[in-house]
Length: 219
Image (tube, rainbow, N blue to C red; front, top):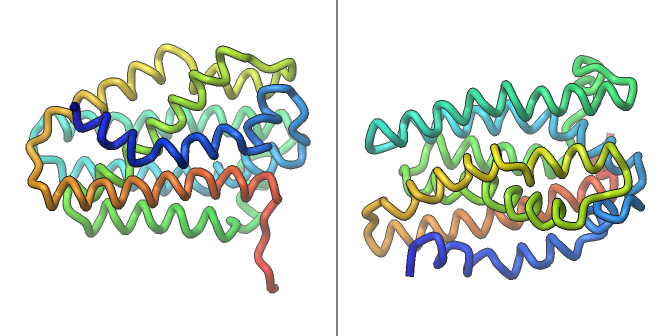
């Protein structure tokens, strides 16, 4: 069994819950309230800079040049491609990024971003990889699944095509190849899997927070 298969088996139950979440079901059939998607996009504006920082920290801990290049390049790609998508989606709501960032990051966004940056900055490379790989892979699986069903809403279809498209799928395939080629001890594998399950849970929570339009419970 490839290590990627062991990793996916650890996350599969959470992934299935993600697919059944009304946020993603609403993306596919077009019934998702625009306010929920707007909340999601605004939280992405807060989240992506820290995601890029986590990728850069992962590159700094990488054991060989190929892995350094992979995660450093993907950190830059996050800023260039995914950030650009967020800016364009914000514009579709009549917002610019400066306006969006005036609204506070929601509790789940703060927790998820903090977890990634802390793990990738202070943990071992295996722990950093465990924290970061589900961010790639779950989005790729979700994008691939939703792309097969498409969406009648052009805004939602645009988002789906980004993560279901060939370019993003190729990026994720490269990360999974790197994962399979690593030589890890049994303890390192266990710690990687633990971090991955936590990140997968945060992925569900991030979409759920957008569905609920989560805000802080006190001022």
